[in-house]
Length: 158
Image (tube, rainbow, N blue to C red):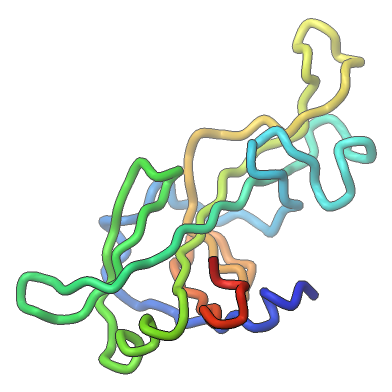
């Protein structure tokens, strides 16, 4: 396991997610594509089969803020930076943001398709659906919003 991931801890957020959810639907865990959306799965595009599922995972840092009533919140971007959200934080979690970095994650789902649609024998690439889904890495759950935490001092958080 990647040492950075091993140091990350999950904090599930049970807030009103309905307003933040985009294209929510249940989908099983899938291999990951690279950050461009045309990346390779863990097995690599060379071993992928036409139509096989793939995904692209994105990570966004959360910042400490306060809501209109003065309560601590985590604010963050998601959906490729096109949308922004906020979550209420406990005083303990708000204090953690001084020594740790919190992240929100999302994923785009897709399938391996021919790079040249006119040539079905061309190399395979991960073609992504434009819909974003929240993603929780520690549980590998789609459509679940969570914060993961990384220690700022160990260099893994940025």
